[in-house]
Image 1 (tube, rainbow, N blue to C red):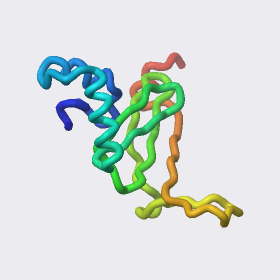
Image 2 (cartoon, rainbow, N blue to C red; image 1 turned 90 degrees about the vertical axis):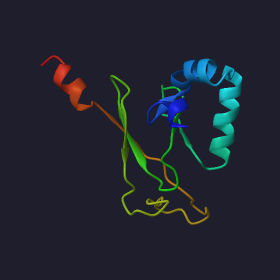
Image 3 (cartoon, helix red, strand yellow; image 1 turned 180 degrees about the vertical axis):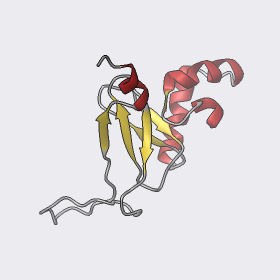
Length: 117
């Protein structure tokens, strides 16, 4: 799976060339495999706003993400309490909360260094 996804937080485009050339898999076949792996809980789909759907191998720990709004770099952030859902909405008692997805947006170190002063 690492070979298809290439890197953590890879989008489908990152795996298309590898899948088509080395695995003989079509683009639709790759989408089907990613959907099946997501459904089985072997990979996790994340969908940062304004970014293509991405996939990661880190599952089961309800980790969160930092996203650079300039270059699109995504980094994992551990769950604050270590147990899902790690956060609970204030004043809500009618839902059985299973997980929380938090995304922080900002500029990564590289983009901050390259930004004009």
